Image (tube, rainbow, N blue to C red; front, side, top):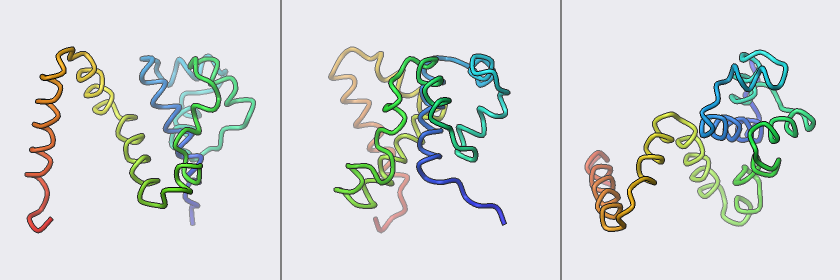
Length: 138
């Protein structure tokens, strides 16, 4: 039976993926910079392979973030301990969503809207659509 990836390894991997995608860098390019295959980068990003300390240091330099970036909002961290499981899963959902191309695209497009009134209207629209798509009884 296969063992599920450790939540911390999944979180660190998702943060690698998010930053790599924000920088518009392919898995292949990151792999080349690290001297590994893109398949190994995939395994890191999924959390199936743990990233060692020296490798994480290399990744942080390539992706131009401090090593601590990969542990922000990590399960079991200070915010999770004080806020309980609901807060932990909520922040992980946000990280997971922002790690997708859809999440990044939406975030970039929204950030380009300069008018605060328009941003508010977009937020109201999305909130209304989300409420309409929830099953009745909620």
